[in-house]
Length: 150
Length: 150
Image 1 (cartoon, rainbow over the protein chains, first blue to last red):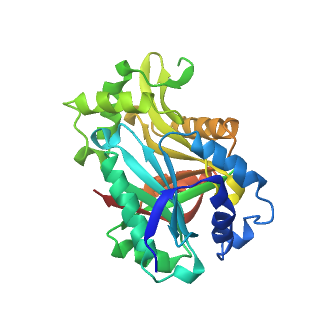
Image 2: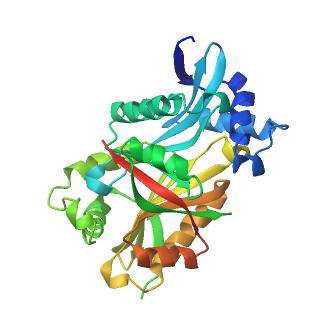
């Protein structure tokens, strides 16, 4: 097994990312892997936004994981900068391999490098296995996550 | 009662904002209203970050509310741009006045203007009154919010 590389997303990664987003009980209902147009437009928006780190994990030339890290400066908690992790996906063949831990650890380390004192994320209430995963990594389930669809 | 204005934060607003952040069961333990230095540095970081909208609600020259809105482009959900609301505070004298609803409505309207299809926020599990408030505004408590302190 080759070395794991975690690097920024480029356009060529988009099909593999969308494949992972769609290969998921929730994602299957809300992604469109047959039409990449909205994803390519979204990649342009992400790439031009500072404070955004849209990453892939790559091994032996294959994209096997992804996550998005956003750095958010703010006034509360004595001017704490926080980070938010979104859109964590691990390729089906790699689940249970420890890759999820490596990706989240990358996000934690990068958050520290960027001066964050807090890392946060939300996980759908149905993803109980993911909840145990985050708790093992030291995250505390201290909040309720609300969403409003526009 | 004068008109309500919702506008971007300037340095002169910081003492009033920190006062509101600290006037709260959770905030009392983690803010330092007697030393504004870290907050002024944080305001510089927020002001230089695009996609950040740190706002105050002002009436008759007084700051009576605040929130922070962050716009986050992303690939998931067919390239959905989402927004995140953080650090919502209403001055003690204004609670129950409908100001919270006006502030959140501003954030929803601004999110729509910025092309967001989703607005999200987290609220400490102990803030049950806030949870009912967000549900009345149409938010769904669909997620668990995790935090890791660095």
